[in-house]
Image (cartoon, rainbow, N blue to C red):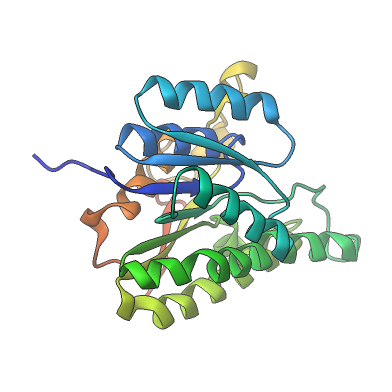
Length: 254
C-alpha cells in the first residue's frame, strides 16, 4: 500500500496559523515530518498547533517573522537550525490580506504588498533554504498559488499580479535547481472550505458550486493532502507544476 512518509524530514510552513496553513502543518506532521510553525501575529494559534504536533510524537518549533524582508527570513533559519536542524521542505503559504477593488481604484500600496508577500517571500525563502537542500541533494519548494491566477476576474488584479509573479519565480527556480534533486511546485486552491466557514456555517455557495465540475467547494484538508503528496517521494518526478485543487473550476491548457 502506498503511503506518504516524511519521516526524517523537517517542513517549514509560512503563515501556518492561517486557515489553510494550520491544516498543512497538522497533515505534514501526521505524515511523519517534524514541523516549523511560522506565524506573523497569531501566537495563540501557533502555540495550539505546537501542542497538537507534540501530541503526535513529532517535533515542532515556532518562529515569528516578517517573510517580506530578507533578514527576518535569515534569522528564522538560524533559529530553526539551532532548534531542529535543516529544513527539507518549504511551504510558502503566507500572504498579505487587503481589500479587493477595481484596477482604477486599487491603491498602489496593495500591489506592492502582494509583490512583497507573493514574489519576494519566495525569493527570500529560496535564497535562504535552497542552498542547504542543494548540499543534501534533496529538497521541496511548494508555493501556495490560487485559481484566481487563471480566472483574472474583476477586483482580483493586485492578488493576481502577485501570484503570477510568484509563478514566474517558481518555474525558473524549478529549472535552476532540478539537477540537485530539488522539486519546485505550486498548489492552486479554489475557494476552499476552512475552519472559518465551519464556524460561521458558510460552507455552501450555490453560485460558485454551480460552475465547478465537481459541484462543490474543496476543503482545507484536500489542499493539505496535495501539499503532503508533493513533499513526498511519491512526487519525486514532478517539478515546475502549477496544480489547481479546485474541482476542475480552472484547467490549465496545452
